[in-house]
Image (cartoon, rainbow, N blue to C red; front, side, top):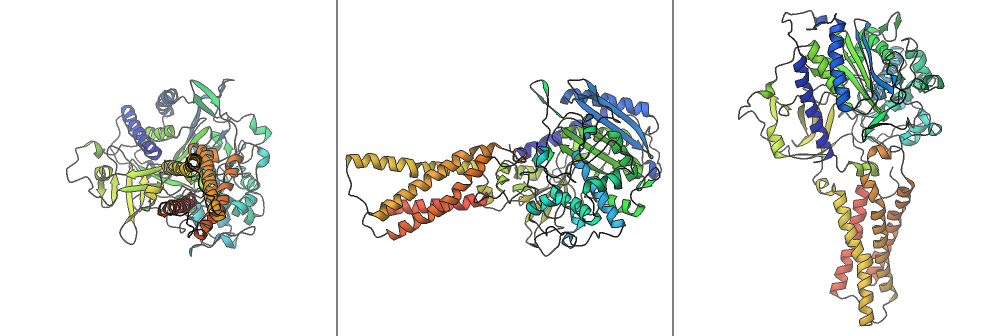
Length: 639
C-alpha cells in the first residue's frame, strides 16, 4: 500500500479509536439549552474533575506511544484554567516538564504569531491585505507567471500557489543560517498554481510574510516580534531566536528506538529566524497568546490587536469547498461536535504541538510533546471535545441503505497531494505518495448531502472539484487538521510515476547496449574477423557505448536517492548527487553526437536492415530517457 494511503488509514483508525475511548469516559450531560457563550460546556468550573479526566488519558497514551514528556495548558475566560506537565524534558537527568519553565519548540504554531504581526501592520495602515506583495518588496520580486497577483491575504491563507520545496531548508550549523530576505532572494519558489485557487500549506508563504514585516516595519523580524508581540503578552521565556539564557531550559526532543529514548540532533531552519517555525516558548507563555486571541486581542491591559482585526483574523477567509472547514489568517478551522474551533499544529524534529481555540466558548488549550507524534494531539482534542460537548449522533454505525453509497466511476484514478513540489528533483521522493482512488473505495463513500461524502466508519469528510469539462480535478479532505487536497494525475503520469521500475528497465537496456553488445561483438570478431569499419561507424558505435555506460553509472549512483525522503534532503543535496547530475548534461551532448554520426554513416554498406533497426532503437532509447529524466527534473541542477 502506498505510504500516503497508509498514513490516511492510520489517521482515520486513530480518530475512530480515540472516539471509542472518549465515549467510555463520557458522563451524562445536561440536556437543557445553554447560552451561546456556554455552548453545552460541562463541569467548566470544576478543575479537579477535568484534571483527573485529562491525567488518566494522557498517562495511558504516554505509555502506549512512548512519549517522554508533555506540557498541557488550558485557558478559560481570560485566565489559565489548568496547567500540567507530564514526564521529562530530559530523560537522562530526570528533569520534569514544567509548563511555566520548560522551553519547547512549537514549530508551525509560530505562524500564528507571524500572522498577528501582519495584522498589526494592517491596523497601522502600512499594509493592505489585497495588494500585490511586489509593491512592498525591494530585494526581489515575484515572477508574474499568472494574471492574479500574490497578496498578503494569499500568504496568510496558504493560497499563494507555492508548492513545497524541502531541499536545503534546514541546517545543523547555526553559522550557516541566513537572513530571511537573503534566503528568499535566491530561493523564492515559482507559483505552480494560480493564487487563490486551492489551499497549499506553504512555509515559503510565511517566510515571505515575515519578510514583509521586516521590510515594512524597518526592523528585523526578531526585534519586531519581541517588541510588538512577545513583550506585550509578557512572554518572558519565549523567543524566535535561541539565546544562551534560554538554551538551558530547552527540552530535548526524542525518538523511541529499540526500547530507548534517543535525543534528536538539534536542527535549525536555514532562515534566521524563521517566521514559519522558529518560536521557542513555554506552554504558559503560549497561554498568554491564546488569552489575547480569545479576549479580542487583549491580554491584561495590553491590546495587541483591535477587536475588528482579531475578528478578521479568526473568521474563515478561504475554503477549498463551502461544505468543508477552511482557513483563517494563520489559523485553520475545525468543525466537529457541532462546534467551530480554530487551531494550528506544529511539527519540528523531536516535537509535536497543537494550539486549539473555541472562540465562542472563550476556551482553548495548547499541548506539546517532545517527540514526533502527530496522532496523540488529535486524540487529546477528541477526548476533550467529548468531555465538554455532546457527541453528535454517529450515523456511520447504522446500517447503510443499499442506495446510500455513492456510485461513481469517474472519480477513480491516481491523485497526489497538491503540496508536493514538482519543480525540483526531490519530486522523486514522492513516488510512493500517490493515492489511488479505486472503484471499490469510491463506491463505499457515504453521501451526507449533495457533493459531500465521508469514509465509512469515520468522521473524515471528502468533496470533489471538477474542471470546466466536468472531470474531477481535485479531491478535498477534512481530516480535522490542515485542509488536505489531492490533484488528479495526467493519464501519462499514471505510468511514468513508477520511477524505480522505469529506471530498472532503462538500466537493463543500457547494460545491453553499453556492455553486453560490445562484449558479444568482441567475442564474435575473434572467431570471425571482420573488416575495419569506417571512422563514422566506429564513432557511432563508440558514442552509443559511452552514452549507455554513463547513463548506467548515473542510474546506479542515483539509486540511494530513491531511498531518501524529503526530510533527508532538507539539509541539502549530498555532494555525490550534485556530481552525478553532471552526467545527464554530458550525455545530452554525446547523444546528439551519436545521432549525427549515425545519420552521416546511414549509407555505409556496414548498415544492413537489422543493424540500422538496432541503432534506430538505440537513438529512441537515448531520446526517451532524456525526456524521462526531464520529467523528474534531473536534467541540470534543479534543486
